[in-house]
Image: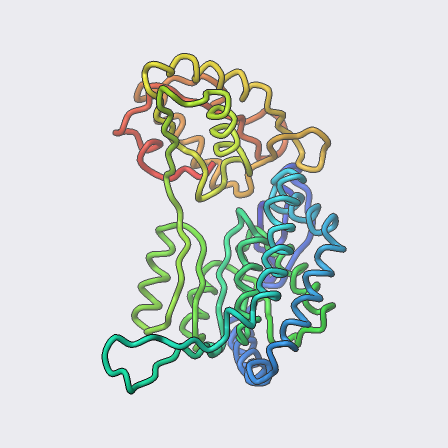
Length: 372
């Protein structure tokens, strides 16, 4: 989805069609601060509630989500661009499963635990789990539902309040998740979705939250971690990567080809765990390359809600431009395009499945996360 700021609103545009699909408010600093204040008040009551009462509300959320799985998945596909099957399998159902698991096991996980001491046998030591307070979740656009709502569910079960700052590219699905929690009976002040530009997330860190969970690029994550460190706020970072597949001569090549293809092109390659590099032993290089090209040629690129589509558009206009720049630079430096290497003609942010050969370690596309 493309986003356009328009006054005090963010306008959301479908990345497959260029059409407007909705708009959300841009929170001011004062409004964000008030959301944190109200969340802190609500957390006192929620943290003092019985665990079974928290479990009951959050279990209802999972049940409602399962009932609404089709509608939620379609919104994800429309806003983010991943194909409908991936929205079901990689976004909605994992949150249903995660929520059910932690609801079933919350008592065991959060139970006070005795620690055995090697010395001082006459002493007793325990781990006693208590809510941190207000948890700020800053989430990305590539998995706009499964990443933040896994964190939201766990934080709420542990007795915390949550402020979710979604990526400005994908705010609608965050608000849809908030609606499901409303229907489950959760106090509205306990879980707030605060929409706005990326800087608003950093601003809220300085407004007195008690824990920060950030998922995004290594560059931004470094800044967020430094800010949390300066303020002595505990934080968790899930950042990017440049993952490689290694294929040895004894590999089952059909299995390897299928695995590499899925790892490279699922969600249009917009995953921190996506396969971005492939190292192939010379004995099987030519055979596997031919298999990869032939299979990738059959991938159907198109609107994510259409039947039979394997890969949808890229979510962010800046990201598809980055892919274009790096492919062109690699080709100029001697890489060969075996497949793709350009946008699909027509409307939408579609980049064709691309395979490059003769890439070396001096090329940016080899060294840096491309995320596409």
